[in-house]
Length: 286
Ligand code: FAD
Image (cartoon, rainbow, N blue to C red):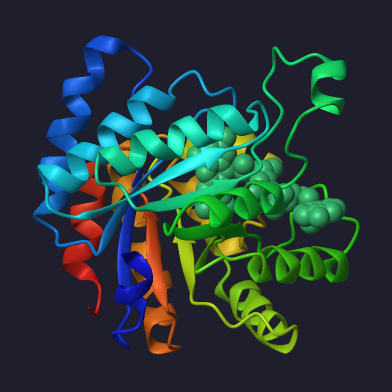
């Protein structure tokens, strides 16, 4: 299980992939995974649609990582639109496929979910599904955390208080939201420690290799963009190849600084681009 890898006392490296939307693209993700495997990650995570529509794909891809790549997979689960029966069925499916690690999330409200359905959802917070999973299974459970606080949080204090509560419900390790300014991560790590949160924390790194990436999703996530990165994006707006090189170099520098400062793990949001992950892994001080 992934929690045992963190006990080895070295930096844990992991990747995130997402299931392709189109059925015919499913083979592309398997090719991507074969390429990611050669980079020797400790584990690979597979995202889950907030509405639950791609849960079968999440399970199938996680099973491929386990059984054909021989790497620990972790399946994301978002609770916002599911009930306990669905959750139990999904956990049984993962278990039958040899997948024993889950990243338990609340998820964001799906676009087609009515106000009434959202207000009456079974699981209000990630903590609520973690409690159920912990009761039903021996699986290793991870959860999300936010160095620059979750956008819906009232304050840093409340976000940390709920994070501590979530971890105490049965979380084995945490993965952060993407961030580009390491000082935000170091500050968060110290505050989490002071709050009594003692599980390993992997730093989520999103390589910015296209200027368009700094658009809506980054601003909605509440992640701040340091001047150095926004300058690069402005400078190379019309030069995709240079932007790609500069974005990879930025991520490599960010990761090397985190490793030098004793980070527990590095989790790269690969966006299903194996070549980007490879360029990063070849250039970091591993
Ligand atoms: P929670 O932990 O429930 O927190 C959400 C908010 O509620 C926070 O403001 C928190 O402070 C507050 N809160 C928590 N517990 C309580 C409580 N008991 N009482 C009152 N307030 C509380 N989304 C997807 O759809 N699919 C994915 O695969 C996916 N993967 C992700 C992976 C990572 C590493 C990260 C960081 C995010 C991912 N997300 C994914 C996005 C995630 O679903 C959203 O950020 C969502 O808004 C919050 O999920 P959470 O599990 O962090 O929620």
